[in-house]
Amino acid sequence: MLGAYGMFLVSGLAVGALYALGGVGLVILNRATGVLNFAYGAIGAVGAMTAWQVLEWHLPEPLAWAAAMGVSLALSLGFGLLVAPQLAHREPVIKAVATLGFALCLLGLMNLVWMVTSRKLGLFSDSLGLSIIGVRINGTRLIALAGGVIATVAMGIYLSRTRTGLLMRALADSRDVAAILGVPVRRVEAIAWGISGVLAGFTGLLFGGLVRLDPAVLTFLVIPVIATTIIGRLKSIPVTFVAGLLIGVTESMLTLVKPLAPFRVAAPFVIATLALMWLQRGRRLTFAGED
Image 1 (cartoon, rainbow, N blue to C red):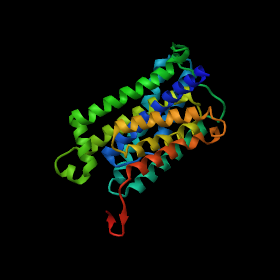
Image 2: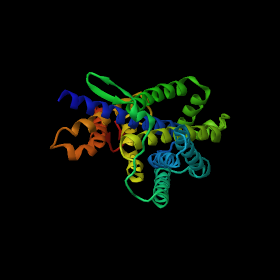
Image 3: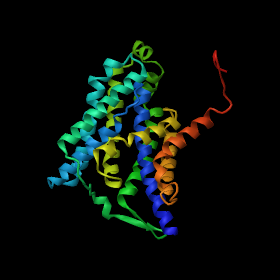
Image 4: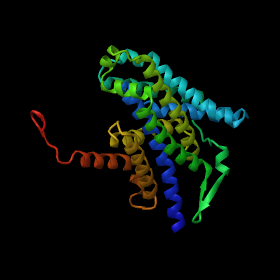
């Protein structure tokens, strides 16, 4: 029994780390551009499917990893440079709906290029791993957990210690004021879209190896990822990371509780709702606004 709990705990931590990694990518992009990118999952899905195709052609696996992140980078940058600037002064909801439309276009393209069928994305790390207290942890789960931790720390340092990170924070406060002060808005936004795209490709690739290599499944994994950013209020990278781990572990452990197992997909929304209620405690709204 202990081994079963340990296995599900490790699995939950790995998936939660990927939720957190996706959340970090969304937070960085939102802080620099004000865009909540609903296409994040679809961008990662295209990267994962590209990696699978490269492996099907019997090309070296490092090339598959590079292709996944390269394609995702290109898609993210393409949207960020061609479409997003046209919506820069529109309401946040319009920007979000535009990314949702982009996600549906990518999903349709994937279904056209890759017919829906059962596929498996085998990575070299699947055969690696170690045992801790009798629980076997494969290399892909270790990479997911380590990648989430490293990305969280690195992006936190990047935003707080580098000049570009400072410029991103300035854009988050006011795009127009930042432009007046001489901030190269388009370049900084392009960097944010690029970072988000690379993280999406890495996340999608590992999700394809851990969960299921299916365009629709990978596309809509953006939903629990967005739940992590809601808990972090689209600002805090550390809180987003912890929220990702919490959601992943909760989803995984609920599998062991038979009455609740069918409802485990609701875990991200329940946790996000409870977190928001806790964060809003002690406040009240009046007709004049927040008291």
